[in-house]
Image (cartoon, rainbow, N blue to C red; front, top):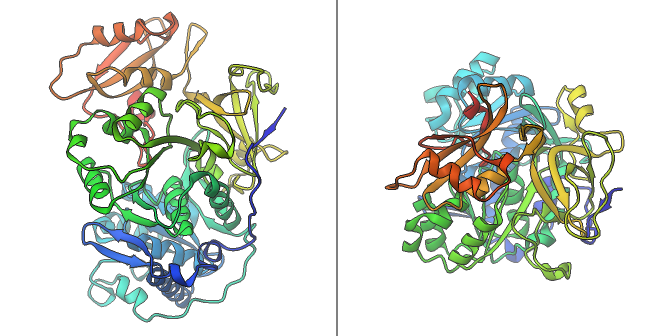
Amino acid sequence: MSFTSPFADVEIPDVSVYDFLFGDIAEGDLERIALVDPKSDTKTTYRQLIGQIDAAAGALAARGIGVGDVVGLLSPNIPAFATVFHGILRAGATATTLNALFTAREIAKQLRDSKATLLVTISALAPQAIEAAAEVGIAAENVVVLDGEGLEASGHPNAVDLLGPNLPAPAVSFDPATHLAVLPYSSGTTGNPKGVMLTHANLVSNVAQIRPLQGMGADDVIVAVLPFFHIYGMTVLLNAALKARASLVVMPRFDLVEFLENIQNHRVTYAFIAPPVAVALAKHPVVENYDLSSLQTIMSGAAPLDDELGKAVGARLDVNMLQGYGMSELSPVSHLIPVDMAVLGLPKPPLSSTGWAVPNSENKIVDPATGEEIALPAEGLSEPGELWIKGPNVMAGYLNNDSATAETIDADGFLHTGDMAQADPTGCIYIVDRLKELIKYKGYQVPPAELEALLLTHPKIADTAVVGTTDADGEEIPKAFVVKQPGTELDEAEVMEFVAAKVAPYKKVRVVEFIEAIPKSASGKILRKDLRK
């Protein structure tokens, strides 16, 4: 049987993202700092940001961009990202955000699939952006290079060309429930990246759902290192922080020293991270050189966080360490451990859990072999099954891919996550692993995430990833890729003996390879396919 969120339902207004975020802003909040560029120490107030968004929307409208059009945005985290992103939505167009690490080929593939007619980027990424745009037939004057030389000098408009006329934002009309706000791309539960159709209602819903659980307020200062082009950064940082009237300290990429400097120098109170950052915060000696006393809360997401690792970070930094869960198809947050456990009257769960379903949502855990629903247990944890989720944050579907949509969202509106999970009697969820990433050893299921969490407790291991590989007999076995802590000696036998002493025999690591770095996506997910090559 399904079980609903234990949190009280929240009101979800039927408005656009722009109106939801800024339509009710109080006069006193307009002079608050919305965005900080730590490199230049430039600060943008909410009044300035809203004015820039309106000007961007006006400029796009003047170029004929509006409802029904798709605009590509290829940029790392910079303050101008917020202006352009929300300007696109304000104009009634749809934003397809591209990974800043993409090659020209990958950019062209997404531009072509999304049918983008205009691309906005920065000079550092301009070569691949211009090449990709030319390949798909986007004219030079429709490739905006925000910090470039400008239209007359280069043939590409820059920020001055775009925003200089300061044209009024257009009057646009659309149904927030059906009109697409963004088209991020995700591999979903299987296969190649697909356009995830997220409506204004999806994005508004998800911010409304997480607001009472995150405890983010106007006095918070948030370090924004998770990429805005990824749905995690887009919703949890950019949109949720702006709705809270908090300040975002914007970082274009993760650098541990810069991350720590920004927390210290800007008195950051709240950080959103992925587990690789947690590893650094728990283990790296340089952390001791910084005053991180302003930091109160760290929320981890994008990949499983181990309880022991999370506790190590919490103890070292004296912060409230939390975890959440989601996916692009869920806008993205579906589960959170709340900042204030008093809202549930329950003890804080282990950090190996992802917390409870967000308000206004419903879950099922289903045995993938039989299709039978798994009930909440009277005690302990349920049997593992695939996690299904229903709520207003569930995507509208995959772009031009009805078959993939039908495979992912059933007739009752439940999205099948492709993740194996267990639940406790209160409905608190524990993610076991990706259904497709489980290693099958002699019929037993071996979750890579469990072995990775264990390996990270070894003092000589800086980072790790576990994948299934095939031995000489054709049997799938667990293989660990290991990054050693600098200056340490570690061999294959020591790694295997460490794991063997702590797990059931079928879970033992049977092959070890030492590498320089674990390949990861911008959001922190391990790129297992790269390791399997």
